[in-house]
Amino acid sequence: MLRMLIVLLSLNSVLCAGDEVYKLGEESMRQDGVPRGEVTEYVWKSEIFPGTIRRYYVYVPKQYDANTPTALMVFQDGHAYVSESENGQFRVPVVFDNLIHEGDIPPLIGIFIDPGHKKDAVPEKRGWRPSPENRSFEYDTLSDQYARFLLEEILPEVGKHYNLTDDPNQRAICGISSGGICAWTVAWERPDEFRKVLSHVGSFTNIRGGHNCQALIRKTDPKPIRVFLQDGSGDLDNAHGNWPLANQQMAASLKFAKYDHKFIYGEGAHNGIHGGAILPESLRWLWRKEE
Image (cartoon, rainbow, N blue to C red; front, top):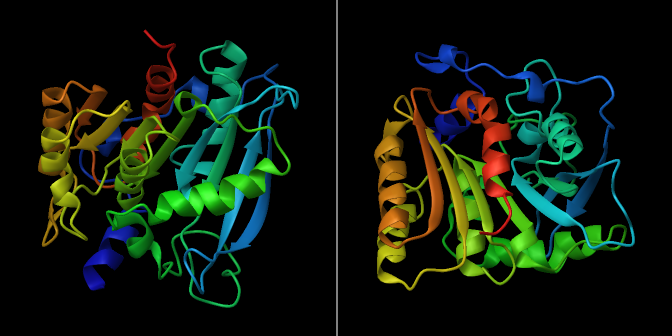
């Protein structure tokens, strides 16, 4: 438990060696004349993860057309991705607004989901503290449970209000650290539903068997998944494993199995600084038209 707490705290850490080379670009900043999407916040009590409660947030672009099935992208640790504050490492709604306006990605519904708390109510403030008790179980477990949570609970609920596509090629999923391996596991278990994955400093280590992903990729017929991996040489090295090595092994396995993938390996630590700096590039690559 202490080691997992250290992992969580490091995601919101101060600048570490190597991080200083990464800066947010103009596409992560508000631009004059760019239509602004709307973000709304909700609370959800899950049956698939009994006894848990969580926040989730829905981004709807200004260009949303209720008559057209709309592409979607799910984010684990939603509070970290949806934040537009000066300290926000990703600022996804801002990046979405700019890239949609530029025509580089389609209009997207963004669904930002926090891990479950085992309490009667969500904490007063969103964020990493207090640590959500169910996070590692939900994210690091190699099973279809989180995919079912999305497909049976969250997407149907959001779908009551918005016209979501059922085309798996127009559904992406993203996460940081344990949320990164969770994104991969969802697509691996249900490529019929999700076929785009974006992982930031993904925990492909032995927290709950995640180190087996590399071998499974090599020994299983390739699935129709497009994958963008980001990691840095200053990432974690602890009893669960070595994050930089694990991500390099993931990239090597994806290459061996001939997956449509891209791996950006930098110098940063276990946080979203590098991933945030290259987020526009990552999204363009992930959402490029089928070749």
